[in-house]
Amino acid sequence: MNLETRTPPARKAWVEQIMGMPISIHLRGASALTPEGEQAVQEAFAVLREMDRIFSTYRDDSDLMRLRREEVDVSEVSPLIQEALAIGERAERDTRGAFTTLLPTGEGDLAFDPTGLVKGWAVDRAAQCLLDLSGTSSCINAGGDLLVVPSGDLPREGEGSIAWRVGIENPRDRSQIASTVSLTHGAVATSGTAARGAHLYDPRTGEMVGRSGSVTVVGPTLLWADIWATALFVGDAETADAFDRAAPDYLSTVL
Image (cartoon, rainbow, N blue to C red):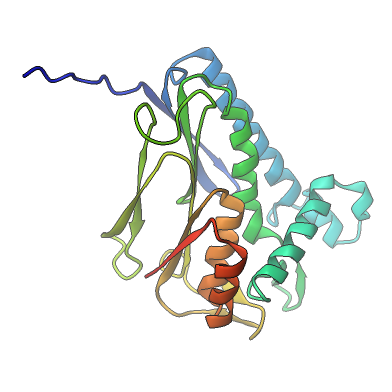
């Protein structure tokens, strides 16, 4: 019996430090080693750097920090700031208050800080640069949260599709993989305290959440997978009910 051997697709990866974290872009398929692939990846990184320029809380010259210091009006900064405000308001409604863009500052007060949604949103926007790469599946990994986007000429399921295996870390033993997810398209986001400690804010109690564990959400966009992972980790049974009602295309795993 003859067995047909399939040649694995060509692949290449790029890494840059943006938003205070390593962000990698991986291509698998016909465009991975081409000038077109290189150009698309650089355009995607440019989108990520621009989002950092607008929303960074660590850069004094970012639009967000200039707005928070009242040096400029919202009409004088990037229109993406207004979009972030609208996304944050919707997220707060949909999660029934478990997600917020009003976060504690170093001075002890609350200020507009869309950090919890910007990373996923930035990756979703950057991925648009990669969609036209012929015969290629792309994966953007931003600090462990990732998005897989196949080009329009690749099937999303079955023969000819390109699957990525994503490991979900055991939050109580980071040397172990608790489970894996196979993705041909879509996003995976995880929130918890294993990597960064008690950094997630519960707006209903006004305190940081320090319990162990994690929540992983899989779905169509990294923006909403990340929002829901955060909300479900800090939230309660009411949040879980809101998730079931508002996010039917997303699945969660609690560890």
